[in-house]
Length: 236
Image (cartoon, rainbow, N blue to C red; front, top):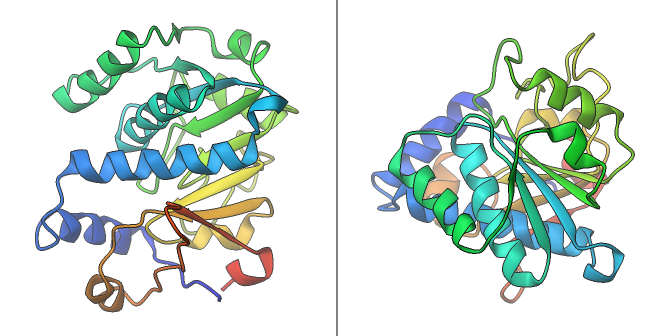
């Protein structure tokens, strides 16, 4: 089953529709997105292959998804560490961070140093709304991500990539190719430039909304919140 992609404008409109006519709260959507990410990481990183997960969180919704994923990963038996340098003053994000602090999940300030003692990295820095230049303190993070030999799972978009056109042609992020990508709700056009393992997550879209935005809800199995998409099926 080949999945259609949706662009940045459509993805933003879809999110707004889910929170209006769809009657979801942003808390619900973030919880479901983070749960999907955690399930993908659980498949990619078996516990007996290393339990240390470093989650890099940006200041927006993508970072919120990462905070939720870190909490679920803790309960799966992993040992998460969180890099969250630009904490939002929004109450939702503050609550998500507090939930991790109550689990004694450590927050770190030095991302390159933290990478030296982890087994897997979750890139939850920038999502589908990213555009322009990577601003501090994230350039060093993107540089470390594109140079590491560790497995990296990106949330919705590899950070620094353009949602329509993929990686930058030159410079920072141009050689960043994560091990895996978790597309939330539906794949974005950047998947045409992605060569790693691809998952779609977000088991909450109604058939009527999917029809309106002209994409297919993938065939989720059992209690799974993610579906892995074969490389031959993702390029559209």
